[in-house]
Length: 293
Ligand SMILES: [Zn+2]
Ligand SMILES: [Zn+2]
Image (cartoon, rainbow, N blue to C red; front, top):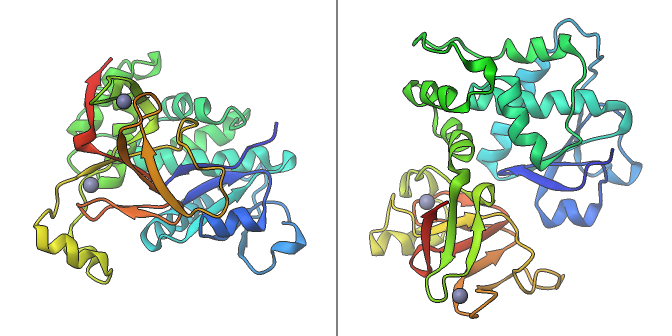
């Protein structure tokens, strides 16, 4: 099964096809693979993981990969995992390991989420699944008994009680929990996006973390630090103008009543809280209403 080009998280991409133009468009700097990569991609940084499926210690690769993705997010320099038919299991394991460690959530729960976005992510090797699950830290609160029954609510409660969660872990957790939310055009009530297509983020640190960016100075003036003025969403088919290769950015209008909702920028945009998405599809909070399904 081939893996189409997709963004799984900020600066984190997967694909079984590597195109120079696409990599450049999304500011992807690093390719991670098990197999060799096509020769025309020699200009990109390439890290090859020599993982065998019967490897007894994959965990060190998982940890290394976790750091690579975290680094990509911090630097906004994208990373892509290159899937091939021969390395589908290993690549799937890397992807799963990242989200499992991030959310401190077990294999089944994370697969139920990621597998919906990308059905090619599959591991049919119990040994590997066991090694993946070993990444999960035991909770200090020992309430988790029904976990194996696919009881997401229970897992969620345990997760939220874990005060040591980082913002990033929350981001994934929010994604798991907030799939019941939808955004409606404030003017015509048309449902624009729902569930996983809304990318919730923890408010960033405002100026302290982004002071080197020019646009921060304007943020400073209106004092909007640490509050969010936009929702970031996944790319939607109803957004007009995305096919136009020459446009780096543009407006997002309601597909029904055409009122202005926000804007997109392939090279990225920043929320008023400082959080940066690249590419970015942003909806101004004032232009929509949030409702729960
Ligand atoms: Zn924000
Ligand atoms: Zn509308």
